[in-house]
Length: 217
Image 1 (cartoon, one colour):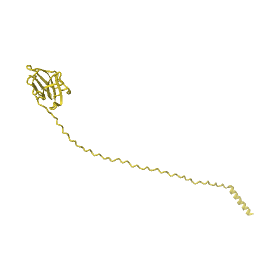
Image 2: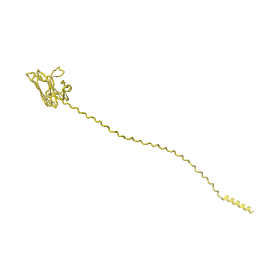
Image 3: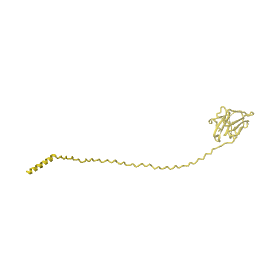
Image 4: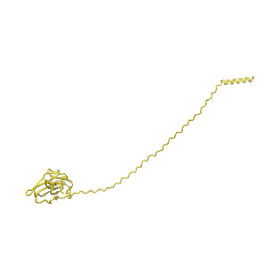
């Protein structure tokens, strides 16, 4: 009897305990953390260092060797001349039959050769009968001109360095002739003419281009 009562008490306690006890929730198991595999970073290729371009070493050019050019010996300038009163054309000396004169007053800084020619309307070049050399700033008179009556033309070449082989000056050449023909008379009449040469010339002379001046040869 006692055992039965005890059993009932235990059963009631068990029942009450079961009915009254708050059931303990079963904890939700926490899933283990998922390990996300971090991809291995691709290594950035290391740029191969480009060695700096070495600037070429400046090699100074050797200074040019100065070749000494020998100074040319200046050519000696010729200054050939004749003398005042030297005759260059035939007759030498002039004919003695005439009594005409042709005087040359040279006031130029250049020597001159004065030539007298007989004028001819049909001649292709002057017929020189006498020519004389007169140095600068000197005077000379050709005498005994005119064994017959004739018209004369006077040609003047002026310059420096008279070349006797070429019968011309080699420098500072100037050429003139009288603007009018000069009349020479035979004896007993006498013709006296004076040719004055000065810078700027005068009305009695005219300039003649070199290519139109007759050769004295």
